[in-house]
Structure formats: structure tokens, C-alpha cells
Image (cartoon, rainbow, N blue to C red; front, side, top):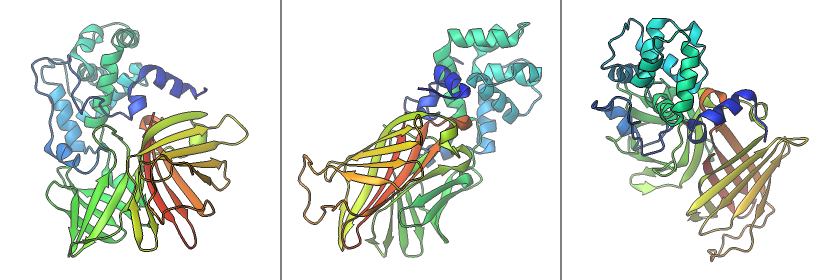
Length: 381
């Protein structure tokens, strides 16, 4: 398996490269950094988790977080907190040119990562070598801090996130000045958030946004799931969607890596005329292989109440789908695909610093006079 050099360095160093930068233990704060201090909390970021697990951080939240991490720091600090945050993230990721960072930024940045790191390297004559040595001896702590800082101290604007649905609609969030998700727009219709729930209203319509990125499967820079619009209390069809931050999307995955192997979750719905079947217990497995003459992408999806399927796309050729016609479960009458329908697949790869750590996408299968399948999926390494 071959990667570009930066990706090799990242895989060797960062746990965050496998989970998209989201803390691995229930959004817990890294411990053993500043004993006796209460971790930074923010009501807006907590409330937003009722809608999506994507990282949403505005400038004010990042500034406040850095201020909380610098409590107890007695050195000179005359620089901007956002500048300190950026330096700390680069240092933790191993991408910083330490010699080019001013002392009044470098020292508080070291303290933000760990007071122990600041004590060990803040006055060292060769700071860069000292940091490398400390990282090698405290790899787990450094990785945890990088995960934490990327979620809590690196501004990322939710207005940059776009989601496309299998119905052809585009979804976008908006936040208020405090960072709370306040509304969602579907094409030209804006729905206002109902309290701190995942429901949004517009006149007599209620939109429910159901992210499939749940407590045991978190994505940081993308999201997927299904939304439903109820009109006067009557629910409409579930509509799968997927997308994420354009600023964290990998524009051309073929230039970044030769191989990816991701696992995750799939959700969706199958219709046949006026009959509808919501797919249950979906899993997804995505393989990207660019070692041959052309890149091959393979997505496998499994469900507890319908046929499993595999979609394969070779280069720029149209994707092909294959259904497993030997299911272990009973299939509801009227939901038996013919294998002769058309299929489309759209995938977006996302991650920090151009490194693919997660992917979301949609698959659609359509028979001219029968089954129609719409699926959204999310995966990570």
C-alpha cells in the first residue's frame, strides 16, 4: 500500500487520521494535561450534537477554548488566540516549521498542547528537536490533543457544508452568533429549528433531520442520513442525503492515495409504486484501489430486511450493481429487483489537511417500471 509522503507521516503519527479528528471516547477531553481545571464547555456545540456530529466551531468558541487552556500560563502572551490555536494544531500534527513561529506564539501554543511540553521545550535551544523527542515519548497524549484541538479550537464554518439528497435537493445549515444551528434550507425553503431538537419548521411543514452518524459512529467533516418533511402532520417519504464541508473535501482522491478501505453505515429506502420499505441495520464497506490501469471503487452494502448489493465503478465508466439473490432473510413481496435497472453513485472523501479520513455518498438504483432504491452511506478507516 502506497501513499504520498504526507499521508505516510500522518498515518504513522496521528490517531486522528483514522477517525477524522473526533475524540474517540464520547467527546471526552484529553486528561493529564492541566489537572484540577474544568474542561472547556460550550452549550451551542453540545446542542448541535442533537442534529449532527460534524465539527462546528466559530471564531468566538475557538478563542474561548484557547483562553481556558491558557489558564495557569505565566509566560508572555501578546498574540491572538486563533494564531496560537493554529500553531498548536500544526505542532501537534507535526507539520509546523517551528523556527518560523514567533516566541510569543510558540510558547503559549506549546502550553496549549501540554504544560509538560512547554516546561520541557519552551526554553530549549533546539525547540524543534525537543518537540519531536517529546512527541515520540508521548505519542498518545499528542494524538489526543490534536483530536481535541481540531474539534474545539479550529474554526470551521457550517455555511461551507452542503448536502445533496437523492431527490435532487440541496441542504444547508445556518447558525446564530453563538454557534447554535438555527435553521436548515432545502433548496429555497428555510426551516427554523424547533428548540434544541433535530426538527425544523416552516409554516405547516416540519422537517426532521436524521443523521446516521450516531454515538458509536462519528464523522467529523461530513454527514449522511435521511430527512423527512411532514405536511400538516402527515409524514412524507424518507429522503437519503450525504455531503459535508467543501473545505475538507478531497477534490481528487486519485492524487492522494492508491488504496483506501473504509467501513461504516448505510441507510435508505426502497419503493415500488405506492409501496415503501425503509432499509434496516445497514452496513457499508468502501474500497478504493488506484494501483491498476484505472481507479476502481467498490461499495458493498448489507441490510437485515432486503438484498445486499455491491456497486463497482471502474475509472470514469458507469457503475454496475450486483444484488445478492441468496438473502438469509425473508424479502417483502414486491421488492425484488430485476438487476436490469440503472445505477448511479456519488462519493465525497473528507479529512483534515487534505488527508482522507472519512467518506459519505449516495447510491440510486432505478427500474423503469418497478423498484427504486435510494441509499446514503458514511464510512471511515
